[in-house]
Image (cartoon, rainbow over all chains, first blue to last red; front, side):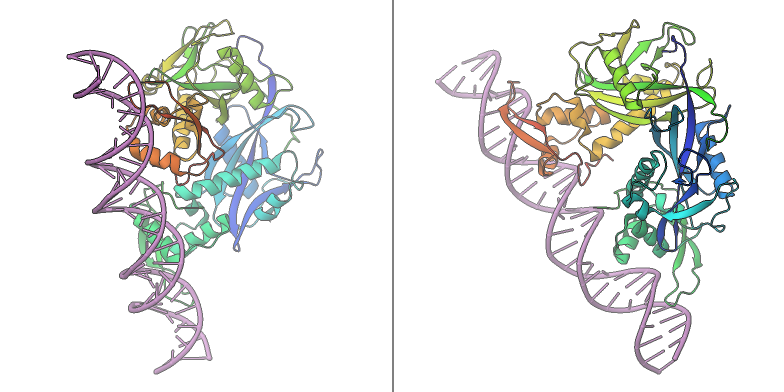
Length: 230
Length: 230
DNA sequence: TCCGATAAAGGTCATGCTGACCTTAAGCGG
DNA sequence: CCGCTTAAGGTCAGCATGACCTTTATCGGA
């Protein structure tokens, strides 16, 4: 390779920023201010800048869109998308990243000029025609990757505050998977994996019931055996 | 996005073509005929062509490198790589694909002018300095993805001929994972998952022992529960 | 022709994880 | 003080796994 001329394409990074807000699984979308797809909802994203790694670009975009530092977010790549007609203006290859965050303090402080808003994931997955470009596919793939990884990694803690109760963690699984889990069996499982959770000594704020122990993520990032998803 | 100018980069597709040859896990590499990295080993690949999807480019490169039609290969994306200095000649973003194949009839019929050869994966993973560019990382990621997916999908059948014995399938797992599996428990597992294997009625060629039943891949592509890898 | 080697196929049994379900603990509000 | 709510912990049957053994079927050599 590289003997030929090097054909040129535009390379973009698009973000699927996922969170749990008010017992709902939501994604951050922007409203397009220009053609094509003017006014349509789209994933936040932008072009790769010179001297910038793909992951760096993802972090930069995340900071721009949320107005927050990307610290505390979990970011990982979903994949590349390069269908020739995916952008009507020309050849654009997009690298899709997903970011997971706990419920954010500032709901939508778009540092960029565009209007950003949280939208429930379920509605979007059901209706394929609400997103610009091929962003419905990017969203579908990112959500599936997130759901898959919940079962065998500690990814769900990314949806929780730094210190959390087992119930909060369980709610993350229940909302992302859209299932109900047995509280007792769930606790047995997550506390039984060595190094998965470490007790933070303290107890949670009163909620009308017995106070819960607070935990922090432990050194173990993989859940073995996996939490069955069925 | 897309309000700004569209910065241009070269987009390439690189291939990690994996197979099992002679009880060894091997990958197809080419020897570079030009600078940079002249004479070094590299993954086969090439630039994305106009009007071509990423997956189409991967299939085209695969056909060019192996001289075979890409039918019968399993191909899937590994991810995108875009570190600014990964190619000394300029900005090149690569999309890495992996292809899995049974032992190939023509060992190395490079349709391209470059010399191609099979190299054991184990040696390459041990020594990070033998591959050009960041191809050691691409290889590492692709191999890890393949190993992971063996446990919960039917990916291992991609290393077997169209009809195969349970021993052949088990050998695929043993070689890719570099472990030894109990033949009896392995059979119980893979025959116990409904739709995973379907008996092809016939029996295998004599090998000095009791003839084995031949199987074909069934409709089930996921192994549930997963085959433990530990 | 018989026998041993070889590999396939199937069975047994203890162990560990899971799902369903129940009991106890601890705080809050009336 | 009592009842409600949530956390935490326990019991028990069912299933999958790992270790190991027995039986079946074919080949090659004595």
